[in-house]
Amino acid sequence: MRPVELRMHGFAAFREPTTVDFTGAEYFALVGPTGSGKSTVIDAMTFALYGSVPRWDDRRTDALALSPTANRGTVRLVFDVGAERYVAARELRRAATGGVTVRNARLERLVDAKAFGELDDETEVLAHDGTVSKAVEDLLGLPFEQFCICVVLPQGEFAQFLHAKPADRQKTLTRILGLGMYEVMAREAAGEAKLQGQRAEVLAEQLGGYADASEEAAGAAAEREAELAALVERVGVAVPELAARDTEVRDAELAAGRLRDECDQLAGLRVPAGLDELAGRAVVADQAVAAARQALLAAELVLKAQRDAKILTFTT
View: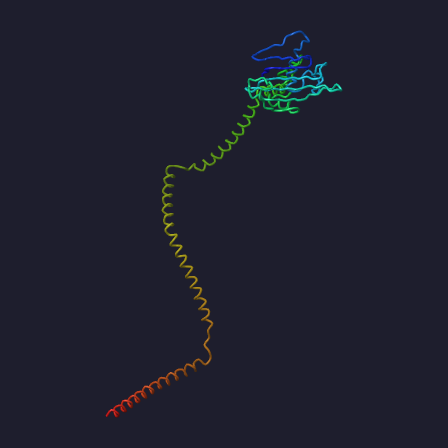
């Protein structure tokens, strides 16, 4: 974060409108006699961002932020983060009972990264009122406590960081320097290494199955493949013939079934009683019929002869 401009009006010792311009300053120092407001400038920057001041014992204490003789105060900080420019602002109001409250807190991103957040400048509201402090934490990557330790060290408290536990200092520095990304990369790399190791084991096991692979084995496999291809071709030709034979077999089985049924029916037939007598009578009847036919034929011949004789007599 790089401060660009700080405006204060009615904040702590700055009852009158005051502007601190940081434009173009790579390094700066606040100098002056004790009580001139040097620390208050830092307090105003911190208050604009987080709504509190590291020198206060209680973050909820807002009365110290407003000038004793003022009923309204404002703090407005323009700052850059990377290539973007933002505005953090808070308003202080004194109630009739004497209590001080914070109103109209907001965090905005300036559309024009070179603007100063004037009334005509276009902005995008990122947070307002109670959500501003959390939005600033997300934007800067530092909560209020770490901001106070690493960026704005209160007077006499520099040793707090130096004497902190190594683990706490490491966490703080890791967060400030963005080293957490390397932990994420390490976890992802370890996960990827484990996955690739498992794949390597599977591939090694699969390669073990080809340990007997050789040129001779490849040649034998090629010959076997050719034989199988020829077999597939023969099978392709034989399948239609087998289908036709299968149809013939089914038809023959149906015909055989019908014949078996007829044989079963014929096997149930019995010779009726008196058949021999009837057969003898049939023979006698056939003989009588034959004799009758002979007699009839002889009679017809006689009749024909008589007719011929009558016709001859009549003619003569």
